[in-house]
Image (tube, rainbow, N blue to C red):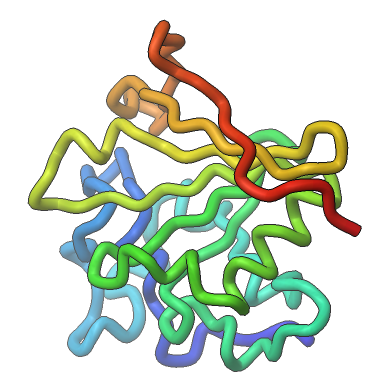
Length: 178
Protein backbone atom coordinates (compact mmCIF):
# COMPACT_ATOMS: atom_id res chain seq x y z
CA UNK A 1 0.00 0.00 0.00
CA UNK A 2 1.74 3.17 -1.16
CA UNK A 3 1.13 6.49 0.55
CA UNK A 4 1.23 10.16 -0.27
CA UNK A 5 3.49 12.49 1.69
CA UNK A 6 0.50 14.16 3.35
CA UNK A 7 1.80 16.12 6.35
CA UNK A 8 5.18 14.36 6.23
CA UNK A 9 8.23 16.34 5.13
CA UNK A 10 10.86 14.60 7.27
CA UNK A 11 13.09 13.96 4.24
CA UNK A 12 13.47 17.77 4.06
CA UNK A 13 15.12 17.65 7.49
CA UNK A 14 17.17 14.47 7.69
CA UNK A 15 18.90 14.49 4.31
CA UNK A 16 21.70 16.73 3.02
CA UNK A 17 20.90 18.70 -0.14
CA UNK A 18 24.17 20.01 -1.58
CA UNK A 19 22.51 22.05 -4.36
CA UNK A 20 20.81 24.38 -1.85
CA UNK A 21 23.17 23.85 0.28
CA UNK A 22 21.58 22.15 3.30
CA UNK A 23 23.20 19.86 5.87
CA UNK A 24 21.54 16.70 7.11
CA UNK A 25 19.67 17.01 10.39
CA UNK A 26 18.33 20.57 9.88
CA UNK A 27 15.16 21.75 8.18
CA UNK A 28 15.49 22.99 4.60
CA UNK A 29 15.09 26.75 4.32
CA UNK A 30 12.45 26.19 1.59
CA UNK A 31 10.10 24.12 3.73
CA UNK A 32 6.61 25.65 4.08
CA UNK A 33 5.10 26.73 7.40
CA UNK A 34 4.60 23.95 9.94
CA UNK A 35 7.05 21.76 7.95
CA UNK A 36 4.37 20.77 5.44
CA UNK A 37 5.41 20.89 1.81
CA UNK A 38 8.13 22.45 -0.31
CA UNK A 39 8.12 26.17 -1.09
CA UNK A 40 10.11 25.57 -4.30
CA UNK A 41 8.45 22.31 -5.36
CA UNK A 42 8.31 23.16 -9.08
CA UNK A 43 12.00 24.14 -9.15
CA UNK A 44 13.33 21.84 -6.39
CA UNK A 45 16.82 20.35 -6.85
CA UNK A 46 17.26 17.15 -8.85
CA UNK A 47 18.30 15.19 -5.74
CA UNK A 48 14.87 15.99 -4.24
CA UNK A 49 13.10 15.02 -7.47
CA UNK A 50 14.99 11.72 -7.65
CA UNK A 51 14.49 10.66 -4.02
CA UNK A 52 12.12 7.73 -3.58
CA UNK A 53 10.77 7.35 -0.07
CA UNK A 54 10.24 3.66 0.67
CA UNK A 55 7.14 4.43 2.72
CA UNK A 56 5.56 6.21 -0.25
CA UNK A 57 6.41 3.22 -2.43
CA UNK A 58 4.74 0.85 0.07
CA UNK A 59 8.01 -0.91 0.79
CA UNK A 60 8.41 -0.65 4.56
CA UNK A 61 7.99 -4.38 4.90
CA UNK A 62 5.40 -7.01 5.72
CA UNK A 63 3.90 -7.07 9.18
CA UNK A 64 4.15 -3.31 9.66
CA UNK A 65 1.30 -0.89 9.21
CA UNK A 66 2.18 1.78 6.65
CA UNK A 67 0.47 4.48 8.74
CA UNK A 68 2.82 3.72 11.64
CA UNK A 69 5.84 3.66 9.38
CA UNK A 70 5.25 7.06 7.78
CA UNK A 71 8.58 8.81 8.41
CA UNK A 72 7.22 11.66 10.51
CA UNK A 73 5.49 9.10 12.76
CA UNK A 74 8.28 6.53 13.11
CA UNK A 75 11.20 8.99 13.03
CA UNK A 76 13.11 7.32 10.17
CA UNK A 77 13.09 7.98 6.41
CA UNK A 78 14.01 4.89 4.36
CA UNK A 79 15.23 5.43 0.81
CA UNK A 80 17.29 3.64 -1.81
CA UNK A 81 20.79 4.93 -2.44
CA UNK A 82 22.72 5.12 -5.66
CA UNK A 83 23.32 1.35 -5.54
CA UNK A 84 20.46 -1.12 -5.63
CA UNK A 85 21.82 -3.09 -2.67
CA UNK A 86 22.02 -0.10 -0.31
CA UNK A 87 19.13 1.41 1.63
CA UNK A 88 19.56 4.62 3.59
CA UNK A 89 17.81 4.91 6.96
CA UNK A 90 17.85 8.60 7.89
CA UNK A 91 16.96 9.18 11.55
CA UNK A 92 15.29 12.35 12.83
CA UNK A 93 17.83 14.03 15.16
CA UNK A 94 14.95 14.93 17.48
CA UNK A 95 14.43 11.15 17.97
CA UNK A 96 17.94 9.64 17.72
CA UNK A 97 16.83 6.22 18.96
CA UNK A 98 13.81 5.94 16.65
CA UNK A 99 15.58 3.20 14.66
CA UNK A 100 15.54 1.00 17.77
CA UNK A 101 11.72 0.91 17.97
CA UNK A 102 10.46 -2.63 17.27
CA UNK A 103 8.53 -1.75 14.09
CA UNK A 104 11.42 0.25 12.66
CA UNK A 105 13.97 -2.39 13.61
CA UNK A 106 11.74 -5.01 11.95
CA UNK A 107 12.03 -3.09 8.67
CA UNK A 108 15.83 -2.81 9.02
CA UNK A 109 16.10 -6.50 9.90
CA UNK A 110 13.90 -7.55 6.96
CA UNK A 111 15.93 -5.43 4.55
CA UNK A 112 19.23 -6.85 5.81
CA UNK A 113 17.97 -10.42 5.66
CA UNK A 114 16.84 -9.71 2.07
CA UNK A 115 20.51 -8.94 1.26
CA UNK A 116 20.36 -5.15 1.43
CA UNK A 117 22.99 -3.19 3.29
CA UNK A 118 21.28 -0.60 5.49
CA UNK A 119 23.24 2.58 6.14
CA UNK A 120 21.92 4.25 9.27
CA UNK A 121 22.38 8.01 9.32
CA UNK A 122 21.68 9.43 12.77
CA UNK A 123 23.22 12.88 13.13
CA UNK A 124 23.15 15.34 15.97
CA UNK A 125 23.45 18.96 14.71
CA UNK A 126 24.95 19.90 18.10
CA UNK A 127 27.76 17.39 17.45
CA UNK A 128 29.05 18.03 13.90
CA UNK A 129 31.36 15.01 14.06
CA UNK A 130 28.31 12.69 13.91
CA UNK A 131 27.63 13.92 10.37
CA UNK A 132 30.66 11.97 9.22
CA UNK A 133 29.75 8.66 10.95
CA UNK A 134 27.37 6.04 9.62
CA UNK A 135 26.35 2.67 11.04
CA UNK A 136 26.14 -0.03 8.40
CA UNK A 137 24.07 -3.17 8.99
CA UNK A 138 24.72 -6.14 6.71
CA UNK A 139 24.16 -9.89 6.55
CA UNK A 140 26.93 -12.42 6.80
CA UNK A 141 26.50 -16.15 7.54
CA UNK A 142 22.81 -15.64 8.27
CA UNK A 143 23.45 -13.09 11.03
CA UNK A 144 23.21 -9.31 11.16
CA UNK A 145 26.49 -7.48 11.62
CA UNK A 146 27.15 -3.81 12.14
CA UNK A 147 30.09 -1.54 11.64
CA UNK A 148 30.47 2.18 12.25
CA UNK A 149 32.38 3.87 9.44
CA UNK A 150 33.74 7.37 8.96
CA UNK A 151 32.85 9.25 5.80
CA UNK A 152 34.20 12.33 4.05
CA UNK A 153 32.02 15.45 4.01
CA UNK A 154 29.62 15.44 1.01
CA UNK A 155 31.17 16.59 -2.26
CA UNK A 156 29.41 18.92 -4.74
CA UNK A 157 27.14 16.05 -5.83
CA UNK A 158 26.34 15.02 -2.26
CA UNK A 159 28.50 11.88 -2.41
CA UNK A 160 30.31 10.84 0.74
CA UNK A 161 33.23 8.42 0.53
CA UNK A 162 34.05 5.78 3.13
CA UNK A 163 37.27 6.28 5.06
CA UNK A 164 38.81 2.97 6.11
CA UNK A 165 40.37 3.29 9.52
CA UNK A 166 42.25 0.72 11.63
CA UNK A 167 39.75 1.14 14.48
CA UNK A 168 36.82 0.07 12.26
CA UNK A 169 35.66 -3.28 13.57
CA UNK A 170 32.56 -5.19 12.63
CA UNK A 171 30.58 -6.69 15.48
CA UNK A 172 27.81 -9.24 15.61
CA UNK A 173 24.57 -7.34 16.16
CA UNK A 174 22.12 -10.21 16.03
CA UNK A 175 22.83 -13.90 15.67
CA UNK A 176 21.48 -16.12 12.89
CA UNK A 177 17.87 -15.47 12.04
CA UNK A 178 15.10 -17.04 10.01
